[in-house]
Every structure is written in structure tokens, then in C-alpha cells.
Length: 123
Image (cartoon, rainbow, N blue to C red; front, side, top):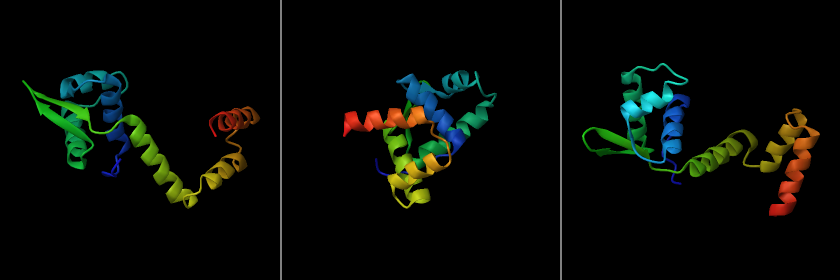
């Protein structure tokens, strides 16, 4: 994925709705799906959508109203954000990230065993 721009937490919520829909949605549909967890006004949705359009993360299609869809897959976005996180906080070292997780006690022994099994199967 070519790095487009940083996406805010609020913009990410819009993207999550679009990714899960798997089809273009209009602003009303986005708002309806978000209303389960957010009480954002229509103008808030439109502002966030416009920001995402400017960043090149979503695209729009004019029908009777505008419909929006992501330009990138969720997996690509997560991979890029993970790479940026590791670069920013761990000098590009995944080993340093793993060490930080272990040292912070964020991983249980069961988590470590699952990761070991995962690496043994996939490497």
C-alpha cells in the first residue's frame, strides 16, 4: 500500500463500517450503521468522509447520491499501521516489540505458547 496519510480514530470508524459492508455505502447508510455505537450528526459523517476522500483512502461514486468505498483493504491498512508503529516505537525491530510485550507482562504464558506454536507452524 502506498502510504496515503494518517487516519484519525474517528475516520477509522468510518473505514471499519465501509470494510465490513463490502459494498459502497452512502452517508445515510454509514450513519445508520454507526448509530449503534455513536450518535454522530450527519454533518460529522460528511466531514469525516470528506477528510478520507482528500487523503485518498476512500473513493466516491455519484448515483442518486454519493456512495463511498475504501481504496485499500483492511489487511493492507493494518499491515502498514503495524509497520509504522514498530518503526516509530521500536526502531523497526519486531524483536524489540516482542521483548516490550513480554517485559510489560502484557503476554501471558499461554499467549507466549500460542505465539511459539504459530511461529513454528508458519516459519
